[in-house]
Length: 420
Ligand code: S3P
Image (cartoon, rainbow, N blue to C red; front, side, top):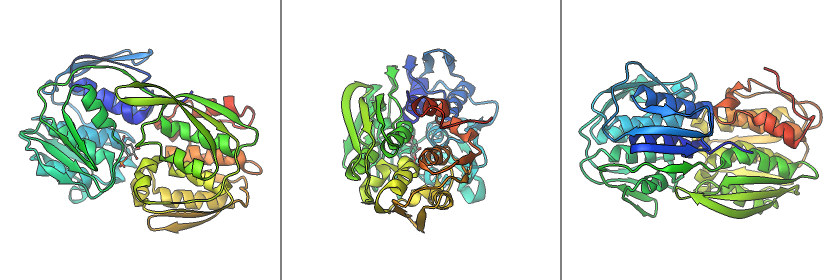
């Protein structure tokens, strides 16, 4: 029902390209973001087959088999593509130029430029080396211990991937543990990874083993249906095969604490990533306060959590989420502005939001700011609002969830229409 996990798919494509031989990936989402990663590794000389079918085949070139791209690598809207590839390209002894769309070109890249330079890569960006486009000339890396000031899996992954090419161990220490898909997949490729509390070390790699990878359903895409199931009357919804890596599922804990009837039934595992069946029933929700270490475990779900909060009795307070300001849009601002258009009282904080829930939502004309998760969250809010809601500029949904509206139509027929 939901597409394959975007974060895991990016990593499967990148590590597949770096492995020695054939990696087969089933359940790879056809989202634009993953197409960007795939397009980039093809431009770097890696052969790929089967994107149209069920199973994607990547003929890995080994760690040192990429060739210099004849053109700029366009990462589109995808921060994961740009930051993870920059890590890999920091290890390649040639020039790469990475760019993206207007939203990505506004997102901070000093967070990866600083550690990759410490490792010895030549790397430059626009606006005093803070913004894309980026120019990377890699090679000759040394292992470092990097203490990241931001809780970011993209930063951690960029440094760990560069660490595969370094002359000694590379360690990343995080302020709060972020999603750990890179670590799990490196281990599945036979790579030695040492993991401690908020600390990960990779050893320089001789080679990576190819894999057969079955990508679990994307928890971040499932989240829109989990919240819709809770806030709409008379729902009883089952979502099969959803990835439930604990570094991603903070939303479930919060919704359960809000009174949400959600059951998680474990299924199986692929490349160290657990999968489950989620059962959701309509529930009366109450407001909560969240912050601290939980936040990176639900960072992408905050737009839809805000919708659940608007439908809950009482006040919800979200803190320690300043990272939301540098996502595909400034999500603190965009959620506060758009939910207030729907009659919800919201207060913007420097690092979060206060939502005064339980007073109903009214249909409104809303904008997506070109941000896929804002567009989908507002669509779910519109299902619960009185009257009609129009969300403009929803083409961005294709970056993570092509087919979102069609899937929603199966769940609530006659409630959603889509215009091209
Ligand atoms: C991602 C990490 C997170 C998340 C993004 C995907 C990843 O970003 O918001 O959607 O796949 O590593 P940050 O690393 O910037 O927190």
